[in-house]
Image 1 (tube, rainbow, N blue to C red):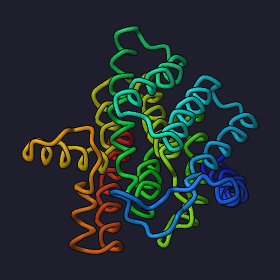
Image 2 (cartoon, rainbow, N blue to C red; image 1 turned 135 degrees about the horizontal axis):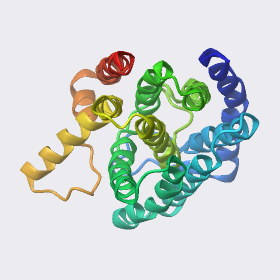
Image 3 (cartoon, rainbow, N blue to C red; image 1 turned 90 degrees about the vertical axis):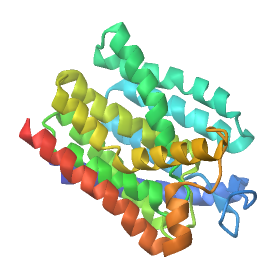
Length: 284
C-alpha cells in the first residue's frame, strides 16, 4: 500500500476525531486560558493531541503497528495531559518523560548503552519540539513538513506510521491554523515530538552509520535552530534555561514580521531540512 493510502486513512479517521476533541474540550472545560506569556485572546480547547493520539491508536491496531511504540506514545500523551491540567514542575516533567521513551525504544533491539543515549537524546529532542508550540499552526506545520522525509525510507512499518500521522496532523491543522479553534496542548506537542524521535530512530537502528545520524538530525531542523537560539539568548541574559518566556526565535520573528511571514520562515527552515534529509537517505 502506498504512503498516500495511509495519509488518506489518517486524515479521514482524524477529521471526525479532531472535531470530537474540539467539542469535548469545550464541553468538559479543557481550555487553555489566556494568561501570563500566552498570547491568544479567548479560551481555546487544548485537546488536539487527544485527537491525534486516538487516530494513531485506532489505525495502529487496524494496521498492526508495533505495540510498544504505541504504548510509549500513550504514556507520553498522559504526561502531557497531566501537565496541561495541573502544570508539572519542569524537572518532574522531564523525569516523567523517561519511561515512555524507554518503552518506545525497547522494540528496536538496541544495546543498553545505545538505548541510554537514545533515551537521553529523546528527552532533549522531544522538549525541543514541545517548546515550538507557541503560535497557531507552527508546531503542526513543522511536524508535517519534517515527517515527509520519512516517505523516502524503505521500511514499510515506518512509512505506514508516518502516513497515518501525517494524515492526522493534516486534520488537526484545519482547526489549528489562525485563528486557532483547537490547540495541541502539551499532550499533543509531546506526542508529535515522540514520533519525530522514534520513527527516525527505527531507521537508524537498522542503518547505524553516519548517514543515518545525519538524516535523523536534519529532520529536527527548526526545533534545533530554535533551541540553540533560546539557549544562547538565555545564557547571555543569565536567565534560567527551563523557565518559559516569549523570547523564542519564532516570538522574535512574529514581533517583527507578523504571523504569516513568521510561519513562512519557520516552515521554510523545516522544508529545507526535510529536502536535505531526503537527499541523504536517498543517497544511502
